[in-house]
Amino acid sequence: MLCIRNHRIVSVSSLSSEPGTCVPTAIGHSPGSPGYWWRRANSRNQPCCLLRATLLALLSLATAIADAGILSEWNLLVATDVNTTSHVDGSAKIGGNLTANGGIFSMHGVTAPGNTGLAVGGNISAGNLQINNGGNVRLQGSQTGTVILNGGGTTIVDPTVKAGVTAAFSYLESLSLIFSEMVSNGTLDNGGNLNAVPTLLDGQLVAIYDLSTTDFTGKGQLNLNLGAAQTVILNVTSPTGIVNLQAPPNLIGGFSQNNSSRILWNFPNATEITVNNTFNGAMLAPHADLIALGGGLNGTVAVHSLSNHNAEIRRFNYTGYLPPVPVPEPSSYVLAGMAALAMIPWACRLSSAA
Image (cartoon, rainbow, N blue to C red; front, top):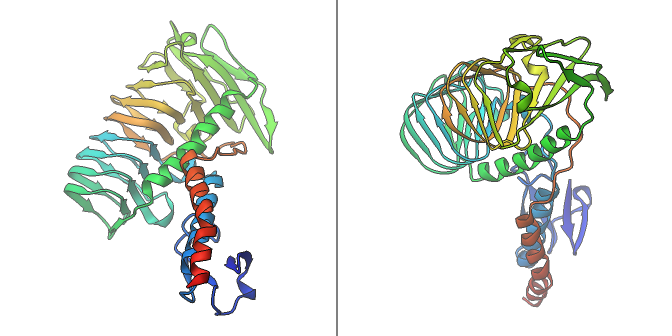
């Protein structure tokens, strides 16, 4: 663990309680994470210490790379608002407001760290909303209506949820772009059959398809020949940004519920997706509103918004291949860090003169 002494970053092991020393206090998951805050062992250099600590926290947050396990930990990830009348088998993380009329979260188990069944960055407006299996609710905004915590969970006020969702979707947008640029090794024939010669990537055989929504026209089914593939990536673009997955085509063959955790559908340019039937595989559509009219989605769902959630989202969280993804620095963090950096000399002079 690192700390600041006399304007230098030093190891905690070299620190002693002397004037000007900042001591780290853990509130996050790991040293150096944005959840770490700093306190002072002596008040004399407090302005300088706090500004330097703030800068370190901001820079850490700006350069953080989201946990690659996010798609396996969360069953539902939504950047903005959700309107639900259905349920999510696992844990859900929502950046905006949640409007629920009979919705259930972590219905069949909590999948996220910290025993979190539901995390909401905005407000909850609930009509008999339930969180099962002892899952906690992490809420940044306010709550109206009835929220029932089944199994001993609790509601935790958490001012970091929205920022966490923003960081997650910075990662997911980059991931979607990288997937979309991968070289295809699969084909879709006129009969709706998907066949590939998988590529070995980081020890996994990965089948990659480059498709358009126009390829689905007139097809009654899409039949996936899984073959030797350990992961299947289907990149699907739309000329209009609108994706209609209302059957037909039906998903058959390798598109089974049991294979859903190693199949990922990537919709890099989608702005709206409509589903009314069983959908097998993760859905990565960071810019799209999802309209789930019925059936069930077997896998992780990561979308911009979920304006109509009337279909089960089932706990077949994605565990397939993930490429390394550098996350762009959010401009707001960079600007805040620059402002803090500019103020440090003034604060240090002020504290030294005290």
